[in-house]
Length: 408
Image 1 (cartoon, rainbow, N blue to C red):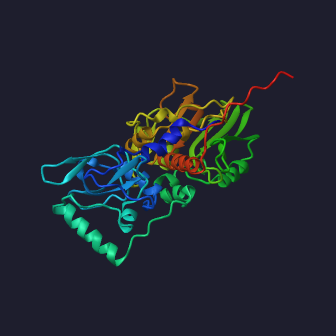
Image 2 (cartoon, rainbow, N blue to C red; image 1 turned 90 degrees about the vertical axis):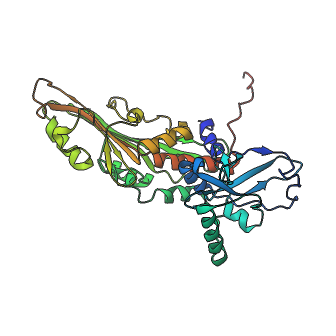
Image 3 (cartoon, helix red, strand yellow; image 1 turned 60 degrees about the vertical axis):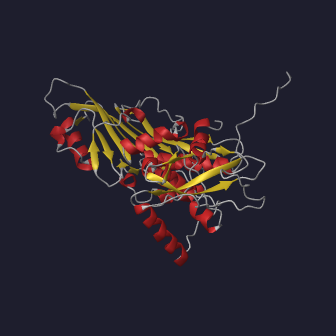
């Protein structure tokens, strides 16, 4: 498939800029042609974008990127008005005066340019920005720290793939597994586990980031299944992050079909689910279609309060496994990712099943099919962000239309 517009927007939304005229606000000229440019820190921009709270932050300085007479972009460095905590990356926006004499900001985006780098290069302008209280104390402490041990800013060439893997290492989502396949698992590990299950059909689906992305093809889905044999069937579908060569499992779907003679009791299924995923007080309290939401601190919340259960939840079709499903990370907007992570947590686990005899008491009814799914919004987002920067840094463009081919 061609380049995803929404995926490119992921980078643009996180590094968008507000254009200024060639002159600064005080009427002086902008930096000369050989003016340094602050180093970029993509990972910190991603983290900052998710926790940014502009209402409680004030401006401590600004720096300009660009050379007159071309368009110049101004970025503002922020500090928390109470705690004095500095944000690592500059933000484009509009400064506004506050009643306490400090300068607030109207902004909606975070750039990839580091404030520490701008300060070290001497291009951070702090004149005209008053800091009082906690903001002033934080600025003083940070300045002392910089003199004692200058901050090392990662160069722009840092591989986004490595950044994405490090960002979620050891997260609660990594401990969620479905029938032995874990969220965050590398592609080769998933391959080994699925092949060890000796299912009759094994299939890998590929996608591409675009025409000019280096190594732009990645494994989108790995599916393995055994069609109905004597009434029984099993299927796995695992979707990966769109990072060529560094794919990680971001969603897992496992389904089982049973003949009437092999059906499991609903009580046994419920007991196994509550024992494995927790959250509910016991198998008696498990609803017909439960949802677990694993939080960043490792706790488990239950119920689909974030209304995103249908992303992968529901009974899967074992007859025709959709191994060529479009990659979810490449279709999700930054705002939707933000909502999923803030409202759902590190992972969403769901279960759905069918029973063959609804007249029997709860717990005794035979289960003829069940599907367990797991999806991690943070892993999907980290993969999407890494893929977006890979395309951006490689100068990727959409596939051009083929020229007209003469009739032969």
